[in-house]
Image 1: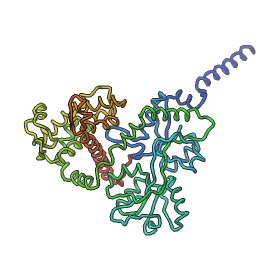
Image 2 (image 1 turned 90 degrees about the horizontal axis):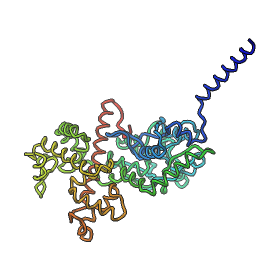
Image 3 (image 1 turned 180 degrees about the vertical axis):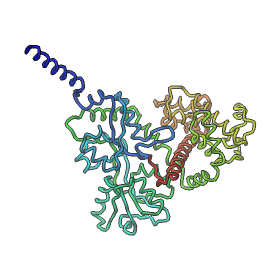
Image 4 (image 1 turned 60 degrees about the vertical axis):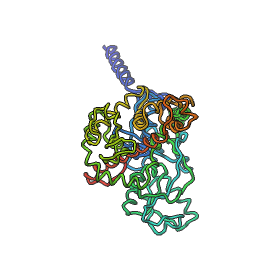
Length: 468
């Protein structure tokens, strides 16, 4: 009897330990843990430069980079967005909250003491921003007459401290609640006078706030990188370093930078302001038609509206010297092929233009991925499918990627040079025009997305901001 009791006790104990072992996972290192779990957790922040939501889902340079890294590892991504920028730095330093941070973090001497940075992926400068109607400050001493406010935890504070060594009277406020894009809104509304923003951020946001201007740089060129907790386990960090080396060598990084920043400098102040006026006065006349036609062909209505604005400035009576006319500026032969009988009729023109765009998108090889596929379609809408294909062939001859817009847009201007167009099937073309055309439309789409999102926020009584 005693033997049976001991055997039963041994069985229960052994069985309990066996069950427990099934629940406990053993990892060789951090990289092994990530792969076994099947996911990485990343700290980021909502901003146009990092991670935000647009018409087709989530976007942003950091979002795209992290998504590619996750694909490289064969895992999924979980994004965590702390309440403030300072918390991102604190949680990264302490560890245990996420695997790393991808939040547009500047490498600084002070941060290097507490964080481990990957190879850099982008260069920026920190810039002093002011609003038109305010006298432009030319040097730090000129800031004493206004309110300068920055975000807590950013590298901007370190840069200002260095300036203060030479300009002791320099003073500023540190905001513990708002982000830089929100401070830019306050400047636009004349509630504060100055703030500091990274050059990539002000490049993007000035499209939405055209009265904001850069006074001067407050820092030398700085570099962005992902940040890891300092640790003896470098397995995941080393893999990230290899990933950045790979995407630099195969030009994926250059393509991503072009995707997010390659279109943002074309539209100037006057054009931006005119566009905003037309959004209020002209767009409402055709908004439902854009939405209906876009929905029918499963494209974003803002893309369709942006094409129309680039073509006609939403003027249904628009006519070009070459005879194209209407809201979508269709040629007579194109209209005939689309069964458009009256090019000046808004509905026929918009529905015809939507169908024509869809045909352009479908015509390119399936291997071309979005958004490059749409950029090619837009270029062919402007200059014709044949000329875009000629540029793609030239790109291949130059050892570039014929399926990437960042490479093909460099080839299109060559089609106006006899040395090159004489070697192509379709001959001469004003190759710079489709590049400008695509660039403008991409900016108009961004402006329409911003306008739509901020109208929703205003309906909810929230302060208009760029981020999600």
